[in-house]
Length: 372
Image (cartoon, rainbow, N blue to C red; front, side, top):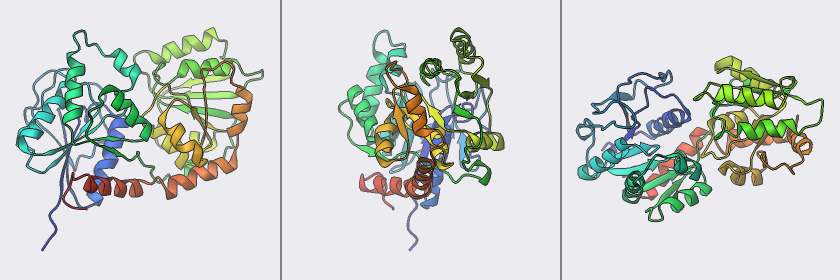
């Protein structure tokens, strides 16, 4: 008799119009389920503008009917026709009415629910949420309590979620994985620059901390490349700060890079810097480790406490003016053993094949699926 296939439904309303680390992560988790023999579907709303997700898995996804004009008001009215009893519904991010509605539909249909927050319950994000009467927080807490499992990427994020809602039923803790890199991305360290890649979100990504850190380095300062797409005017804010700190001779801002251009930047940099104030699980950081790049990251993100003890990277407090910046850079500058360990970790311990299998086993052990 043929083993029944587990039906797995990923729902992220913005999947087609908001390419990001969330959509990249969603793609890989969906592919991991496909590799396990699951029947996988990705459901989304018809895009109504904004960026288009050029990396959408069109063979797995389809759009469903929604009411509303966009992210803040969408209601997935077509979801009830998609879900069946014992399906596994995976909801991505939070603070949207569409996920609350989807959770209700799943309960009515007898489906299991997993929430992957992607870091949206970090305190700095909660403080930015417009919620005058506390209704949105009540709805989020309800959704977290009613979910069968909350999937986080590191143990530190469990504490973050429990601080927001202590009554979470269970956690599945498996991080995003690393993908095989192309030959041109393998780290050589032959360039004359340190590198940051990401979106220009000044506060979240800690770009102000990074530039202040750079301004405290002695002259002549090393070269720093900051590369990525604009985010709500963040590039101009970064340029303004760069000018105020008189860093124009050592810091260069560039636009979004992809493909071979990004690979070469990683391969040739002296080290990769990741100063975010918070981060659930950075895809860009994982790409850097897979390329074997020595990495210096903010001690405040969850990867620091999980990976530094394994010798995969180094951490520091970019905001602390007492930190010895030159010594911290020297820890990663051209550090061949650190790059080798990062590459070994990415290949042997953090590949998507490995973490995908761990995810499937964990889902089975938690009663979310009937097959493994």
